[in-house]
Image (cartoon, rainbow, N blue to C red; front, side):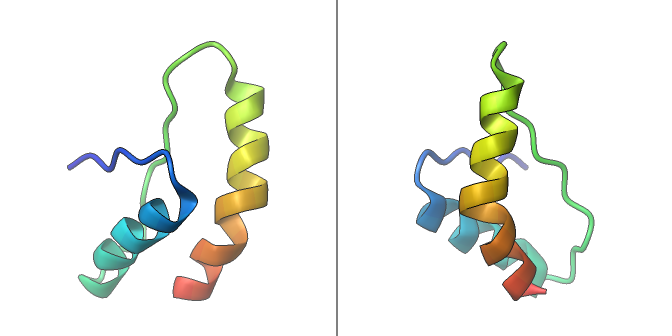
Length: 54
């Protein structure tokens, strides 16, 4: 399944469903050429909140 979200709150909520189902290995991918931007935004906006889920 895919999670498509542009809002960090929405992404965390959707990932939380997978964690509730017992999944603990997820792959995050962003299409496009600016992978550095994706990684920077992920680290700042998502990583701390996702760690709290598990």
